[in-house]
Each structure stands twice: as structure tokens, then as C-alpha cells.
Amino acid sequence: MTSNDAALAAFDPLTAEAGPGLGADLNLDVILDVPVSLSLEVGRTRIPIRNLLQLNQGSVVELERGAGEPLDVYVNGTLIAQGEVVVVNDRFGVRLTDVVSPAERIKRLR
Image (cartoon, helix red, strand yellow):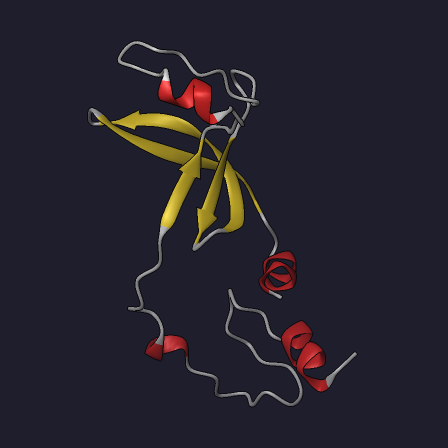
């Protein structure tokens, strides 16, 4: 394990507490206003370009995910949670049903 690996393992991004070697006064205020992209994935599929070019209004594309399965929630392309679609005041939203642990999120960043 490198010193960088040890530092990442000692850091809890949700509480902003630092373990040994990171300093106890870590301040996340400098990054709190940085915008990130949040995206929800209903499902995926792979189709040949021939079929893609034949799509038109009313076409149905079958996805690999079944009905009723949770959506994947990504931040900047990294899976952070799964959830379900909800409607709030005539707008779509997502209710998180399973959140990836902070330690696992850090592992996926590498």
C-alpha cells in the first residue's frame, strides 16, 4: 500500500474527518460549490448501426434491464447509488434505495 493509498483509506468524505497523515482541519468548503454531473441510467443495450439508422418516432428499443429494477445513479460517470423513479409535484425525481459506501466510491475513483 502506498502512502497515497493509506491517506485515501483514512479519509471519510462524508464526515470530512481525516485520519493520521491528512491533518485534522481538512476544510471541504473550497469544493462545495463545484458543479458535478448527476445522471440516471434506466438501462443499456447494444444495437448495430443498421438498426440504429432504422429507428424513428414510435420505435421501441429493448433494454437489458428488466421492468421494476432500480436505476443507476452516476456522478461524473461514477456509480454512487441505485434508486427508483418517483413523481413529486408533477416532476420526476429519484428516491435512493441503495448508496455505495464512501470507501467503495473512493476505490472506484482510482
